[in-house]
Image (cartoon, rainbow over all chains, first blue to last red; front, side, top):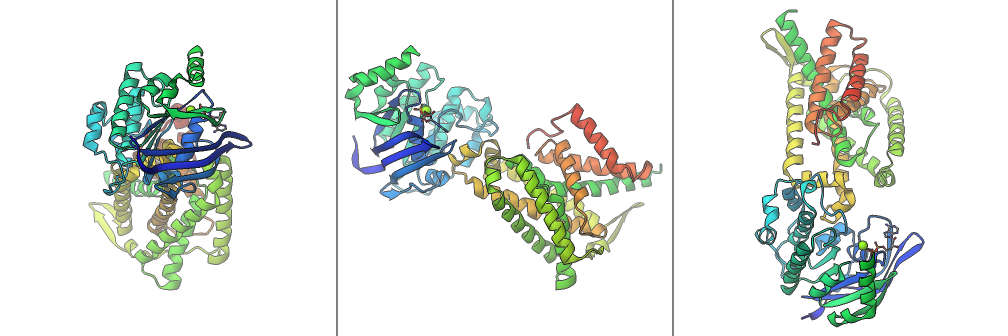
Length: 245
Length: 288
Ligand SMILES: Nc1ncnc2c1ncn2[C@@H]1O[C@H](COP(=O)(O)OP(=O)(O)O)[C@@H](O)[C@H]1O
Ligand SMILES: [Mg+2]
């Protein structure tokens, strides 16, 4: 499924919040048409990792290590510039604006000039993928349901013609059926070439759609492999551990 | 009261009120979009008036170019302030920002006193000499300009905020600056634009309103206080709200001064403000 050189890669990325290290020496390559699942228990460092790739943090994260996009280093690039150069992050939790309308969310996104290394989705396609958003164009972000908000955040990320898409727990708070639907939509985008990094607490749902899995434990990568690692006891533990909560 | 007298008071109040609204627009945006305050606002008004006066009187500028240069000077000054307060802005440390801008205000007043002297000056606006009469009601070309420019600026700002990408970005920034970055918005640049607008708009207001009376380097306090009142009554950052509030205050002061006492007009405004705050804490406007 994967072809050619990595679209995005990171080497020895570590993240500190003040004195505490939340991510240790993380390395990963993302290829065209590949979907990677990042699994791990609460607080394992999954959000810290994807946020570091986007150069973004709600707190004061100090990131070290190398991050590159199409072979060019972006480690020092500001988050809004990374977004414009093709790193789209749908962050965990609040990821749309409550007081901005759906159509104004779309207006915020600058659509880059045609270029074949970017994944292109037109506004029409977006509305085909998410018909609910077309109906709710004039609604404010705060008036949408949880599922609609995830769709809006995802739609905006896609509209930017991303080179990679980072999704941080898109299924949180959604009904199982909507989760399956959302992940299948994402999978179809991956099959069209878009590399996706999916952080998911719902390991069972994630394992159905991803090509590769990375397991984090207290800020370290402890396991990496194809879907066959699903049977690994550590994944089972992480997953079962969740279920006990 | 005669009808013509009533109409004259109404017109005077309208001109003054729209003038207040023009002075307040920069702060309205600053507060509404960036959740920031600038207590040097009134002093900047004074400074802009003197820059305009200086350019015309000492450098031989025409009225309009002098205003434009003064807008540029004040815009740059505001961007410098933005960079000085970058850390406090980042952390939304409003107490420090209030103290810093008050400090800047005093420094500017002192500097202006040293540079421009303590004597009252007049900005010789050619528009002032232009006298118009409608029936028994009189107004100057300057009055008419204030009315038109304020309405145009408010309409333009409202359109930009409602209908453009910049407007959407400003509302996004106002709500969540961090998240805005994930939508490709550069918060620092947008904030720079907001600060530049704050400076340029107060300079434009000064260029149009200050010629109505002699200017002094000690002025500015009334302007900052009235702006504050307008922004609060208008509904903290509401653009139509600020326009209505400015107009209401102008008309109120005009009638109160003529019929009751001009000495207590400002006190009466504050009394109204207190009643207003207690009764309707969120102001007239809803959002922008
Ligand atoms: N802004 C922050 N400031 C300080 N510590 C943080 C911050 N964000 C996350 N952490 C800490 O970093 C660790 C990893 O958190 P996170 O990346 O959010 O985990 P996950 O997404 O896997 O649940 C946790 O111990 C968490 O408490
Ligand atoms: Mg997380």
